[in-house]
Length: 522
Image (tube, rainbow, N blue to C red; front, side, top):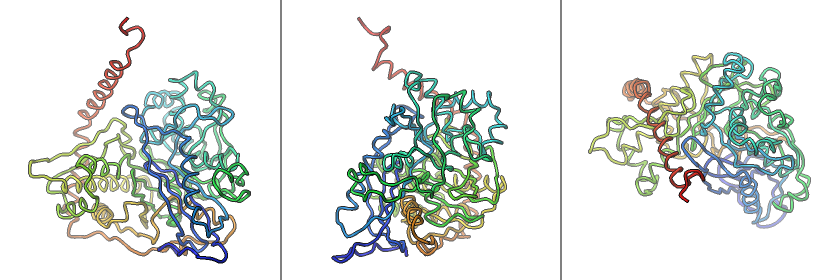
């Protein structure tokens, strides 16, 4: 079962295990899990994404494979294990374009935190029709969609795009490096709006060809399908046995949902991480202009999903701003601050916002500051801000026809009690917390185990705790939520103007540092 790591054997036969690796926004994680679901070893490699200018978030896709190799070699170094299969997952939807030989042409453009493609969204909505896109694809165009980001490269980097032949995401890139097979899972494809037909569950070439006629979009499979076998070259690089199966994998949030068994109709997975994600399983296709309607990670399933652009990223930023105190100290201060952070209200839109406001030009705010407020109040306000955004998403999911019967929490933010308690208090909903909350890498390992074993995620990872809302704070948080909704509506004009000013100032600064040949001094 999930829980404490399995003691490593001193001798005898090696322990049969599966490997799961996830490429995340702030780190990559690898786990070895035995066939009963017990964590044998885990390793993490931290990294930073590149933010070359406001609204642009990128990463060198070659690092994904380099980190996979480093993690795998580190996990295997102590010996005593025999890897039977490999599972992969990663942040997404991302756009990594390569030439026909699979050589990356530029850094990967990341998921909804990258908001550069606003002009392309407008053009596609005009060309294909906003309602028709929602009807055919299940989601409206937003910063989350991969299609406009591909169009951005075509518009802004045409010489480079002329050489683009293949599209990868982190999970498919790892599968390609391991097996040599070019493919993508159905769920990831369903976030490539407007290039994917959610009813046909296939690429929709009439909308692909006008934008990317020479791009050979990958054949599609399901996340748990076997992509291929580890090649001799990949085995030499990683230390894995040649010939073992590799599953196709999927986007990290959906792998997280698999890791905690949130796949039944009515389940909602709530992922606590650098960003925050919500995946709700619905009985049939549902659409909302404010959410993402996707196919699920398992055949026959459908989801309504949402996501915050920043969550744990705000607390990390705040910690750095305060000079790097321990998170434990900040949590103690935030606990003492109490509900409502002594009159503070934060808007968590530090990188724009995804659902349900779909506003790439939203910006973070802290309202109510006085000279009496301290670090604990700010930290508490940041945690409450994410909880308020989660409540907004939950209400939007139910307004779209969702029926949330069970919430399961997962991710690094579940480790401390305070954040999950605040979310339950603000939303008025209980959250189940399983034994193992490491998340996407564990879900990838579970899919790998299914290639050769009859395994159950409920047996692998049982629920061990429930966080329940406290009725005595409900009225305070109801009032704070009302103010939160009013603050966004009332400040939107100003924050949009500030976002435009930020872009203009950055453009001017870049022009000063790197003058064009025409404007340069002789």
